[in-house]
Length: 306
Picture (cartoon, rainbow, N blue to C red):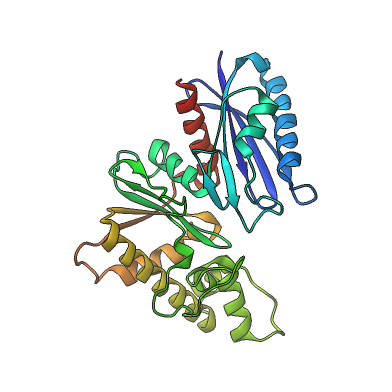
């Protein structure tokens, strides 16, 4: 039996999956990257994890055909390089594909993690059969994986989809500096919502995650409802503008904040009157936290030609 490896590299956590030639994930393994996040150290962790997964399923390394890895930040897929990321230290111009190929002795490909999630949703998730859609990941920050006419959009400098830098009404207008969050994500990213809640409640209140604030809004908390309303309205502005430019028929919300049903419902309500030139359909991710791994499996199968 032939196998492929899927990798999702996060700011604090690493996930590795082993899949068969039909794309079925057979086993998963994870590890923390908090204490050892250099490219070489992470690749060594991946190598160790792959070894453990092969043992778990009773397979040998000779069965491996390809590995696909997702990383947060700007990734040059053609060169296999992580150009820049604010989530991992020491990863500027990191030759991740070459490191993986050397460690595992199989073809390797690297992609931005949110684009991998979009590939996953296109293949087995909420966007199956949809040629034009946007996967919008809202977690600590915001980014998008964009499909246009069935093709994943990268841009000449590999920054297509960095929608956290959008400027819409209600977001900061000042230019952002290096390693700083973009205008949109400072307001509706998970960290931006947490900070907004802290500002309006005062430092004496316990800090709440965005999803906790939305939960309070559902229970009638007036201040929490104000935060939810602002977040949903600004998100609706961004989605409406992206839909108008891209003519996308579908927006799939993912990420720890994006999959929240309270935010989804509130954003849909605000978008309801905006029917011109068209109103995009707004739904939650069908794959959840596994979207990146499933997208990596699909990409690995493609380069292995399985």
